[in-house]
Image (tube, rainbow, N blue to C red):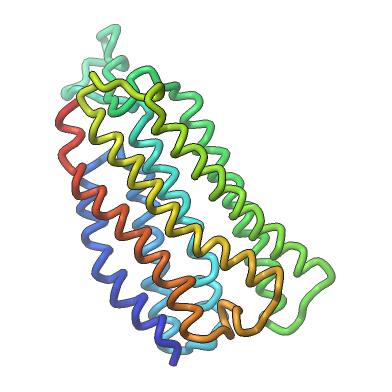
Length: 263
């Protein structure tokens, strides 16, 4: 049996209730990161169950191979939560009031552009969906032993898109941490900064996973394969980077669980 699948199941069964708690603690302001992290944990649990039943089965291994997508989207959402203006509704909402919609909750940067922030989220999500579709379509034919003419190309293009998105998120998180992109007088400045710093640290861990994916796909070495590779490869280059990235987000989420109450 592939030892990674039981480890996935055990770790993410532990993480999931904590992530759900953070999700409700951050509420609407933190919907994106904690929703996607919940999806990632659920995918790992399902993959772990399937892998324990059949460690060589394609469903479990495909889930394990493409599970990086919701984690990158979660990190993108964490940056978004840290620096973008979010709506804040004062209950009960008086819809007849002229400014019922104008209440805002801001953390690090009160002058941040909601349009720019949401544009980054939408663009990142679109690219990642396309990348996953290409990776699954290409790799599925290959692992089934019936590669088509464009299967390797699809797999490589999808993997490159994931790497490009990761690189963009690294740059975006660094730009979001610039002094000019924050206002120290904002009530949630320190909490928002912690969220973005957590996103950057998580991206550093994910970089190991992304680089491994590039090397694995472009070299086609069997010992580096996410399905046929050694246990050491799967643990060091796949399992641990994802666990550390998710754990980083969880720690930051717990630290900032009361942040919305300060703004």
